[in-house]
Length: 260
Image 1 (tube, rainbow, N blue to C red):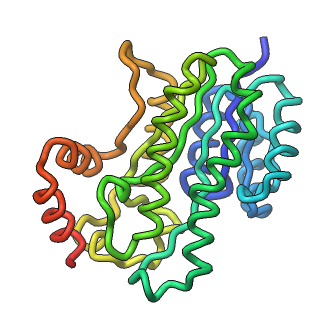
Image 2: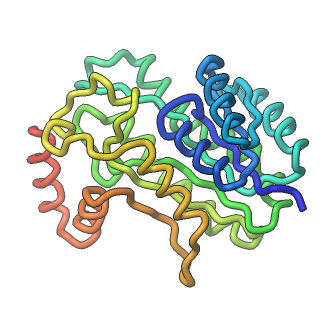
């Protein structure tokens, strides 16, 4: 039998790198893709040193041709795609009006456009692999709009909606679509980010915490369908509060945490 496979975007560093290392250690053939060729080379060396299996390649998630080419190359290894992890993302923090419009557009293109493009391109491979799964990296910033993270949170809220829709739409293809929800994670993406929320809530998660959450969500299915997986105690509390508390209370709490 061929090995199970996982295709990970934004794999050169942070959450993507930690996820690639974990799945490789569990016997998966890993597809690690990013625009950072140096980071991918280092990742491949680490996986090979541990006797793991990996294919790397340059992938700009906003480039549709890249998606088609990288997926075809990866599928040629084992002729299957068990898990697609849409992890690649960018973040800019600050007052909405102080961020260039071009930067806002890049956030949308990568965080949402890249997920749509990749998931669309991967459909036939997922459909032809029994029990295939898509994991979308969401964010606790999508629970309620966060000051200084307006565009970023908006893209993650859209990813939430896309995940829910595709999980229903693709169920008859035996494709499961889920979202994982970390709060702030200690990666390069949040280096230098100082918003009211990061100051009040702190950065308490590691990339390895999120990778473990992805592993748990994809490998331990419960009896009842589940789409959303909060990572860390803070995200779980915030998600529960947003679900059950009245809107004015959720707004007040977010105003307090963000220092607005």
